[in-house]
Image (cartoon, rainbow, N blue to C red):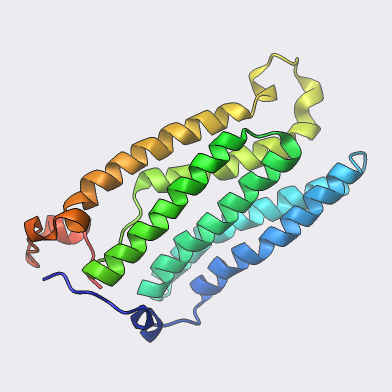
Length: 223
């Protein structure tokens, strides 16, 4: 049976874990990334702030990997952690893309589509938990999308250091191409999510849960 959950149920699990701390630390890095990038734009000849920006971005990528790895390694996986990690990812990726839109002319329309997709993702995750008692599982397309965002931001940030080595029509001089790839990956991910959760959201009477079905257990996660 699909059962509704209450928001307070999330807080009944472990909160203060290393993996949760790493997830939150990723968000706390965002203001520093914005500050270092602004200082570099104001003084482009001073590459110190640019290196700080790149280092902060790499640090955020590392925490994204380490939080899940340490949660599994230390046995600290929790319902809260599974929601906290993607929410922190959404905040950081939207923030990172906003910075390169503002300072490096990344296409605004790609950012707007990305934000819309993330809003839909938050709504779906909350709906599945609160109304259906199911933990929405991130698919590989979403994880690939986060990786592409990180690569895109690093590409734009690194361009001042390498652009003089290539002609203007070279592929390296056009990091916006990664944004087009991002849109493709996000579109595939939306279709994959729709196929997985459509009946659960809109036609729960059609969804039959069999706890003994290993394939179904892997595909859906009750909480």
